[in-house]
Image (cartoon, rainbow, N blue to C red; front, side):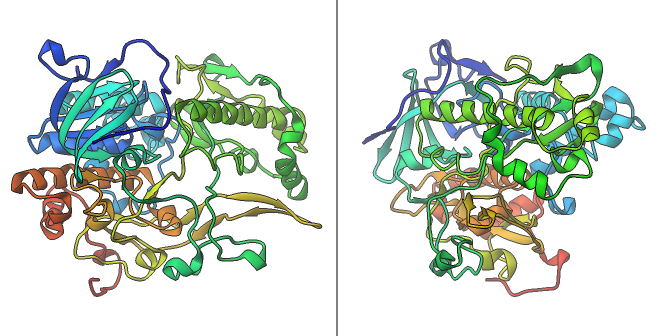
Length: 512
């Protein structure tokens, strides 16, 4: 059976480019034809960790990605890592940050300001992250076909056999992994998924569903939290590209931001435009979030996604121009902002703009087990726990509502603290009737509320690590991914340095 995508290409055209290593040998396979033990869709940090873990287990692993530059958000401006308690980060995720730290230490010296700024490798410049990833993939022997789009899949019953790309490449594998932010492969494979917010009653989650107005509180919808771009800015004159007015700039587009700034005038520039410090006097800066403009993105085809990305880019650039020209911003802060600009040595082939829009939430797998609010706040220990999360419940605004006397950023949720909790292997697997050889580390089976704390890159990397090891266990025993022994997987991961046990971080709790 062949299942085809409903939409066409996103990439720019021309021949596929090969990153890290050629996708396969012999020569007739170099364009992408081939068979692999593990095929990973998309080069997010989770995807890279999956492929490296699989390769280290002796498997032939390859990545197919729509992007030209690997690394997802970690090479697209998200250098201020949302790790929460760093002690919970282990395995390949810990190794990545160690490699970042080593890079800065070797280049600048152990006592340099840049090594101090990198915070043991948890803060980094985008191009450094990409360099580390490419070298790491090369060492591991991971093949990568970039600027490609999976257009259809071949299945034999619930078993995924191969994918076909938009350029006609057929790539087969024994285990497949959807490591994309959007969940494209799981949809093509025919797996059940959820999009948007569940009703509070669905899983008994007090914080789920619509939050405002009161008469709709707790209801379900398909709306998503806001997306944005994470800009890499600098105030180093020789490396600064001045901000410019974007096309079709209209200050009225920023009515809500203007109202907020007028109601609570910022005392520091960081309150209007975060300037999270990175090495070499750069920043990880969140731009103005365009609430409501992300809702159609996950289900959109490549062309429509490109349109949404371009619109967000224009909106984000316009927000900075708004702060410089039209916002009710105190003059000293406007003057301070004028000293900043885009980093000239980042994203050099993309107008110094990040490659990837920040997809905070896409499709979410609907497996036999769904992680819920209670699983991350109360029932925090699992027999098949394979990685730890610990970030607070963090949902950015979902909708913007105007009432007779106020403007409400609806759906946002932040600073609801959680203790370290375990993420069970069973949340990464689809229903047996839908796919027996697919794993999903990013768009895993979790509710909207639970997903808001899981959705951090170090956690996704650890889940990718788990997928690579789970793939090796499945292939060793000839089992489906549903039949992999979660306890054995947990033990193998612990041997790899993964932090899998939350009990040392809190009082004991019975396994569920």
